[in-house]
Length: 143
Image (cartoon, rainbow, N blue to C red; front, side, top):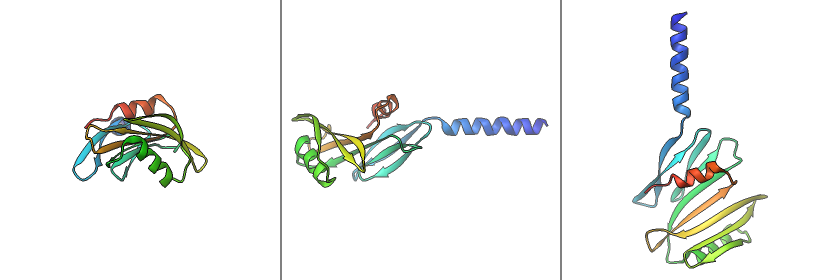
């Protein structure tokens, strides 16, 4: 009985540790990487030039990617919307930032394009959902 109790304690300890938030390194282009925190109940998927963090039930996600380009954020955002075959509903457009919504497969996705610290690169963030957890994931980004 004591061995069973010990095994149960070890299993619970290991499983609770496995479910805690984890920091994940993502590849952003050929040489750059960034880290992002993946909370319990979420999965990370590698995407071109970044990664996506998806809630286990697929109800929410956030993706972050970096693209080398000579375009400023608004023209890049317009080009991206065209590639997505979506009509963007812009919320904000200025020289360094574009924010818009698109509907893809019947689901509203928010897209933001900003200049990164590198002049010839933009950061593209796509998000489905609007929760504190998504904000915390975004805030966890570190280069």
